[in-house]
Image (cartoon, rainbow, N blue to C red; front, side):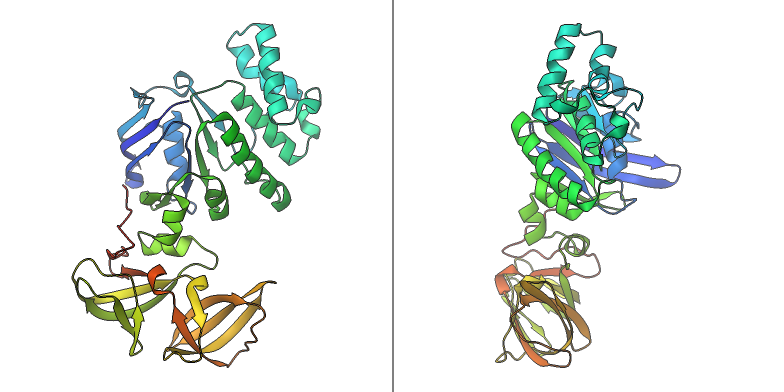
Length: 365
């Protein structure tokens, strides 16, 4: 396996900048998820790493070697597509063997590799079956097998679970993570699904409009979002934003919301008076009748063991996650408290996180 290093990578299509100044490193054996909405540049980034698109500028290094301008066939990578890209007239065995046969590998070694990989993916009983008659999950395993059998330096996957139904998808998320752990493959995985990224990845690069908004572990991305975009994109429901005007001084440990002081992580820099946003996750909100921060319940959504409660605070609607055993109804007056150390603060104009004791920015690219 190999390290992937991307340096100042850019891709333009005419006047449109699809990828802008991306920088990241995928360590040997690491699983990186490129996460973001449609059109954010994640697939274009993957295709440049694969050699299917050439960058406008920047460098791509595979295990220390510059492969920026090499063709896809000259890079030691395997690509798994969303739509499987299998040969319907071949059975499973021949589909998996095809890249090895194409390389001129001896028949005995081809047979050995195919059967080893099929056992790894638990599809050895399907080797002589036609791929056209397989279920979606099994076809995806065959597509993975055709990539794994080559034993490449790294795997690139472009939304490989996108066409599967929910049941198969959840199962394959688990299986892909286990497979990655067993073979130690360096993997770059494109998805728009935050649950896939959070479940499988060692690191996540969250992209928007061609820019990597944040690069870090799932825990860093979730708990210390670097921008309002990341905070809003990650989480279900996403982070709440309570906007207010004011300035902050280095060392401050509270802000004023609706005339009520709210504890926040210690501020590490002076902030001139401007428009700010307090970010709070739904699970970091508690209902407390003694609190001076008041609101009115707008609606509730029952989720079994928990419920999501929408509360109007002075015209700002926020969502809190609480136990379903708590009886709350539309129109109820409630008091709220926030888990101060878990809150985030943002400069609304730039969208960037304000430097606090628990947030160091986390931006990359």
